[in-house]
Length: 138
Image (tube, rainbow, N blue to C red; front, side):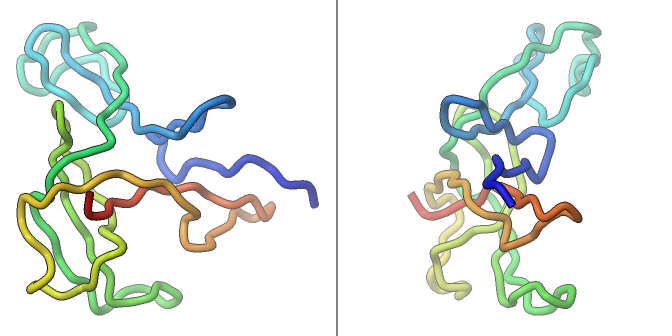
């Protein structure tokens, strides 16, 4: 089997042919609200057809987290599920890695950065690997 480019785990993860992966968002030109996922109408000001595509920041702060101790078979636990407020706008959920899953070591509002890596060995039915995004302390 030949080595192929990994597939993104979500539609808003972009993997350019020449360059580093990034997360894509949509910003309302009227009010500045930022969203994940394509849309035509702003949920805040209801402006129609005023959304522009933007590259989301790869840094932010930890807003909230949960340490998960039970999951589906094949998912290693414990892991940290986190919600991050991105610098420049936008809020996103993902896993916080490279830190012990210990509340004494995790601080709310701690700076984090987005990193990209293999989606925990997951593959599609053709054997293609997936690329995912994670957060880690900055």
